[in-house]
Length: 73
Image (tube, rainbow, N blue to C red; front, side):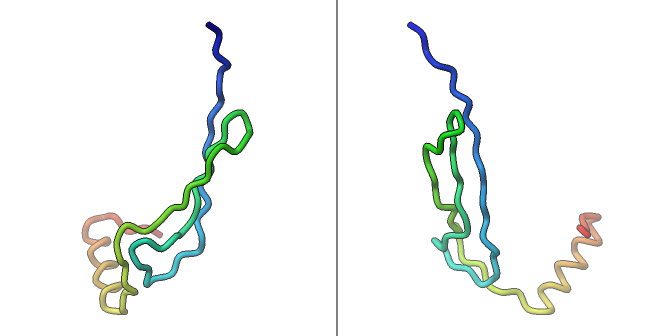
């Protein structure tokens, strides 16, 4: 029995995301292709609510990242 070799790839497209977002909100798509033909497109959703951070929350997170050595520029 001979089976055709499939070349599967995927592409992730994220929308511009701004907090707040709610559980279930669609924030992008995942497209699966086999041999350059799109076979499936799946919505990417948020799995929990994310509120908009205030100034103090952002500042605290920034300080925490510095102290942990995880600051991202």
